[in-house]
Image (cartoon, rainbow, N blue to C red; front, side, top):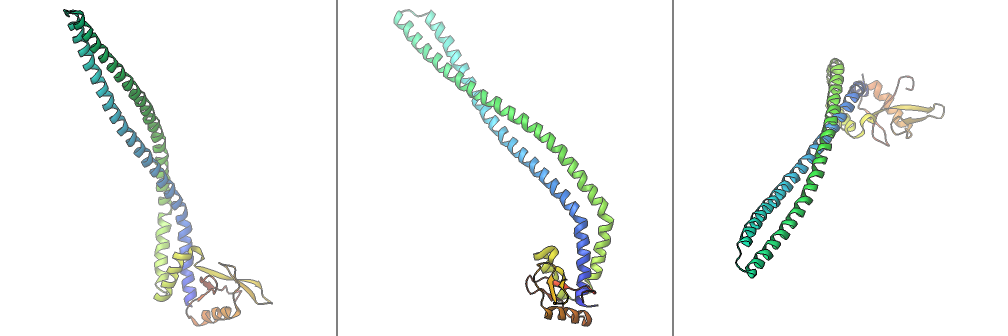
Amino acid sequence: MSVTEKLLRVFRVDQQLSGLQSRLRVAEKFLEEQTKQLAAIDSKREAIQSQLKQIQAVVADHEGEMARLDARVETLREQMNSAKTNKEYKAFLTEMNTFKADKSSAETAALEQMTKLDELKKQVADLDVQRAEREKVQKVASQERAKHADEIKDRLSQLKAERESVAKEVPAEAMKIYVDLVRRLGEDAMAPVEELDRRRHEYSCGACQMAVPVETLNSLIRGSAAGTNPVRCVSCGCLLYIEKEVA
């Protein structure tokens, strides 16, 4: 068996593994996306909660200020009732009006902050609804991922064992080249020579569709007979193999 034929056995097992794992990868990607969306919702909710705490502190300060001003106004009313002169009475009245104006400003500021609080609380409630819905989707995605993993578990183990077995028969240098090509070209790491016109000796690479020279074909055929190193496409660099009927 030539090196190319040995590599082709590895390649075909890898194709089966890839096909088997493709649905699992889709399920894992979907689960990962749901998890990311949940994290984004949690992050946004945490930021809003932080704003809520800050605004609540500001509102508490305004309410404390209003309570202080109310107490001061009541004290001034008592002082006004006991005022001995009109001048003293007017002084108390002016001071009380100033405090009332300050309280009105504090009330306005507090109301503005409370309006913001209501808006933020609504946003938190909306996020809670979104999170509950996303959690349901994530749970289904997790179940689907587990289901796919369980369905392919046995066959996956068989193929991995088979892959390990056939890979042992490939020379180390050839396997290194193959692994590098799989990393760079994926499913196009190996490709068949495709016959375009036998009479005119026109053949192409099954990966890049570029013409394969007759010299390359001869090397493939001789390699298959002699078991020599694999032949690569002069255009895309993939490992070429040739089916018996084409050879």
